[in-house]
Structure formats: structure tokens, C-alpha cells
Length: 258
Image (tube, rainbow, N blue to C red; front, side, top):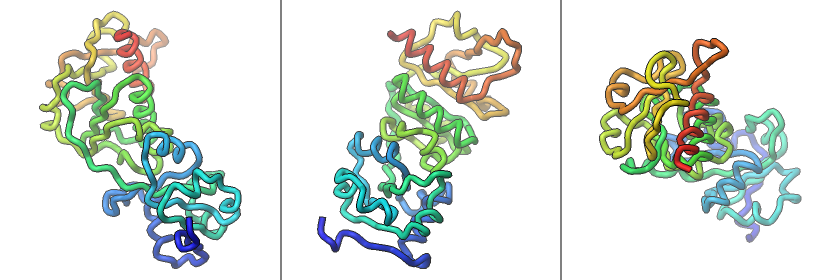
């Protein structure tokens, strides 16, 4: 890398720094800019491991001389920020001192026969990120997020996903009509009706539909389902957190397949 590839930034008014702030602190800024901000060693490694190359690599000035070659040589453009500017940019309690700007992937078409997860207005970013992790872990390669679901590439969902984004086919802003392309059974979750998960003959591949934290799946999606499933709760709780329910259901499918 030549010196011209590296730019040192010391002013809060720098236009590139302002753009970074928007990506790091605005949940939907990526939709307008077409770029995504990821911060920290784990997320950046996960992206590189999946063949994603950053548009920009960004470092805190104190870390820049110590950064390993795999970080300093991975992007065509590198920004080095004054430490005070980095602290202002970072959304982490303990700033990780490095991050990447990635080009936002194009929204792909729905693949018909792929084991999938449908997110119906799941609004908590932590829940969405956790469900993405479970999907990746249990072999559900496609996630279809219906309109009203938390922004998939927002900073908090990315942090909660812990790198799962880069292993998944992510379809954001989908309509119910987009589900017509699916050629696998849709299985909806419910807290009060349907077969108990531990007794059900689960289809695989299938598309698990996880609904809004308070309302569950919408009636229109429920009408498309082949099967409704509930999870036995002998402890007596009314319902499970949607991310916990997703992990249990996706694991059950993966176990049934194996």
C-alpha cells in the first residue's frame, strides 16, 4: 500500500467522517448510501472469511501502527482517525479501534427450495440479529424479512448477528406476495395453538415464520402456512422470546434432518 492510499483525519468537520457517523449511528442510513459500517475484530474477520472485501478500512490513530497486515492491506482506501474522533464515532462501550465500510449487497431474489426463515415485523434489533445467528448455525441459508422488520444491516443487528450476515442470503423489505416463490412448506409458530414441537413431524427443508414480538405472525401469513407449531412450556410462562423460540425451532428442524 502506498502513502496515497491512506488518509489521516483530524477534523470533526471532515465529510468522510460525517458519512461514517451516519452509517455508525443511523439504523437506516445504509439504505440511502448503499454502504454498511461494521466495527471490531470479530465482524471484520467474519466478512473477510466469507470473501467480502471492504470499500474502506478505518483505524484509530493509536492502533494504526499496530494493526496486522491483513487489516492494513485489505482495502483500496484506508482512513486513520484521531483517537478522539474514533471515540465519538464508535457505538461500542469499549471501542474496538478498527472497522470496515462495505458495499451493501444487492437484494437477491427468493430461492424456491432453500431452508428459510421468514421474519414478520420482528422489531427488536437484538432479536433479529440473534435469529440470524441461529439461522446460520442450523443451516437455514435464506432469511426473508417482511416489511416492518428491523433493518437487517443496522449497526445493532450487525453486532447481534456476530457475522452471520455474511453466511446468509438476506432479502429485506419483502411483501407477502414474494413468498409465492417459495417451494418449501411454511411453518408458523404460535404460543397457543398448533402441534407441539416435540411431537411434530417437521418438514425439511421448510420456511419457519417468526412473528412480531407481541402479535405473532399476521393472519395473512398464517393462512399460507402448512403447519402451526407451539413449544411446550411446562414452567407455565405465557410465551417465549421470539429469538429463543427461533433457536429452539430451527435446532429441532436441523436435528430432524440429521
